[in-house]
Length: 322
Image (cartoon, rainbow, N blue to C red; front, side):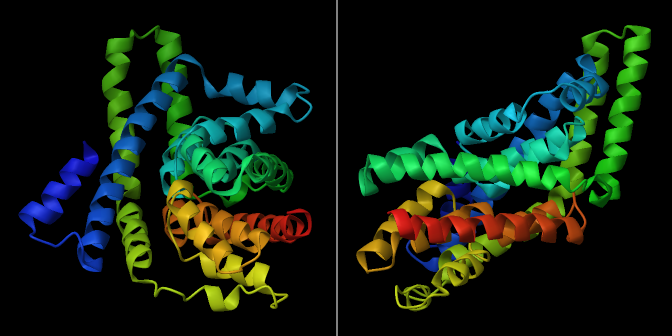
């Protein structure tokens, strides 16, 4: 339905040609912008309902006081793997987790894994590269989320969340306490929950538009063959260069698999190509723009730097074993 609406706006009302880079880029922009706004709104409502009936202190205390032996990171990464979101589409749920008081390391485990692994990409990966490579990629994506979330969680990065998200956390906690004390029925809580959800959408709307605009441009206007010359087997810096070159890009895992297949067919090592894919889907510039509303630039830099380092290590390991 969203795609049909984007097609109507761009190709019918605006009269742009679907076969041109401009038409495709504008269509991409409208589709992803509408999709993320709707996702953010409805996920914020759902998380508001959860917070209203399950106060964040209980969940926070459970996750921080119980000895879960690392399984909290595994379940967060596994949940990320079964949600079919790209890096930008994952952020609404990430905001919901942070708003709900879930520890930051666990939310990062979800945010890292969600764009890397999904069922569509797995099916395409299996068809293109076989079962062995697919299993290794999926396992490494989940493991990357777990390790990345654990490491980032140990850094105690909560002070580097933005003032905006801290204020939302406080308001959510205060409202929940009041509702519990007064035994407020659901129908009387719902207007405040919806209003809060719309407030979150308004707060990040500009960042959504800027981020998706950057992604749409990069998606359609990067010259063909631009990356291959930097990712050859003879270049021992090919893996970190591929990660660096991938960050400005924006695509989901399913959309990038055919490109990776072309890279491998042209002689680019599979590990280098997979590192490029991980960086494209997991560390996009539009994602950083959206995260700016939730995090300070310092926290975004730490997050991107940590994940990029793990992706580079994974790329070299893939080249050794595949």
